[in-house]
Length: 263
Length: 127
Image 1 (cartoon, each protein chain N blue to C red):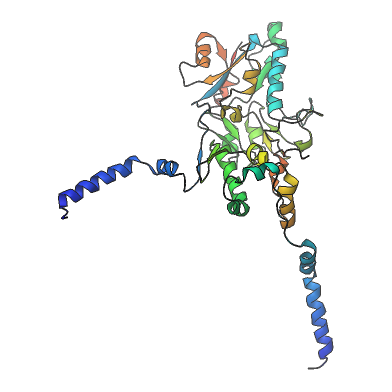
Image 2 (image 1 turned 60 degrees about the vertical axis):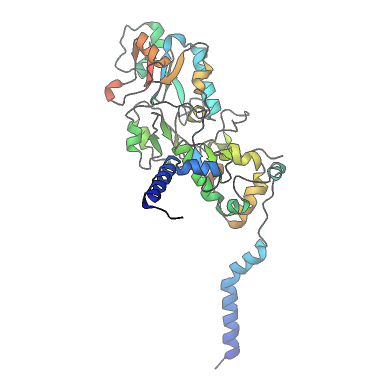
C-alpha cells in the first residue's frame, strides 16, 4: 500500500494528540508498573489557610483541661507538671500574659482570673521559620507551621524567635516518660527524642485522615474552639469572625497569627 | 639472609597481632542472622516491594517515606505493583513486622548500625 504524505501527517498528528492527553502518570496507574509514586490521602482535609477561633466565653476550667488533655494524650506530650523542663503544645495563661498591653487595673475579675487557652498561632508570617537554620520548621501550603523532628538540631533559635512561647525543648528523653506515668502512649504517634524542639502541629496527621484537630474535637459540643479555612468565605471560622469582635495575640509584631479569640 | 627464622617468626607474630581484631570478628560474628518474619508478615507473603528490594534498600525507602509524609504531606504510597499503603513506619511497617528484636535488631546489631528511628518511634510490644 502506498502511503501518501498527507495520510502520514494525519496519523502523526492524531498519535501526538493521543499521547498528549494521557499523561505518563495516568499510564503508570493504568499499567501498574514502573516507579512507585506518592499521593496525598483522598479523605484528607484540604485548605488554604487553616485557622482557629477560640470563644473564651464558652471555655471554663473543665473544657480547657479537656482540650489540653486530648491534645497531649494523642501526641504523647510528656507531663512534667509545671517543671521548668515542661513540654506544652496547648496550655493556659492569664489574660495579662496572653494579651500584654491590653490589661489595666480595673479589668473585670472574670477576665483577669480566667485561664486563656493558648497554642501555636500558626502565623502567616512565622518568625520561627525564618530563623530555623535547617528548615526543620517551615510553613506548609495550607498555612500550618510544621515541625520536622528528623531535621531539628536543637539550636532553639525558633524558641527565641517565637513571641508566643509556643515551642518547647526536650531536655529529657521522653521515651520512657510518655503522657503520664503508668499510662501507655498512643502507639500510632511517635514521641520526641532528647534535644529537639516541639510544638503544636495543628494535628497534621489527623487532618490527613479527614479528622479535625484533637482539641477542637474534644470540646466539640460546646463549640468553644472552631477550626476552618480562612480563605473559604463560607467556612465556620469566617462566619464567626464576621459575627463577633475578635482579637489576636500581639498583632503589632506583624506575625499575622491565625488563632482568633472571641473575648 | 641473616636471622631468617627470627625475622619470619617476628613477621608472622606482627601480622597476626594486627589482624587479630578482624580475625576475632570473623570467628565471633559467624554467619549473618536471618531476619525472622512474624506470623502476620509470613501470611502477607509480600512486603510493599519485592523482598530483595526491601533487604537492599529499606533504609533509602524509609528516608523517602519520611520526607514524603512529613514534608510533602503525601501519605499514600503506590507500590510498583499498584497496591496502596499508608506511609508510616509505626503504623504500616511495624503493624506487620511486630517483632522488632527478631526482625530489625538482630541484623542491625550484626552489621553494627544503630538507626535512630526508635529514639522516637514506638515499636509494638512483643509477646
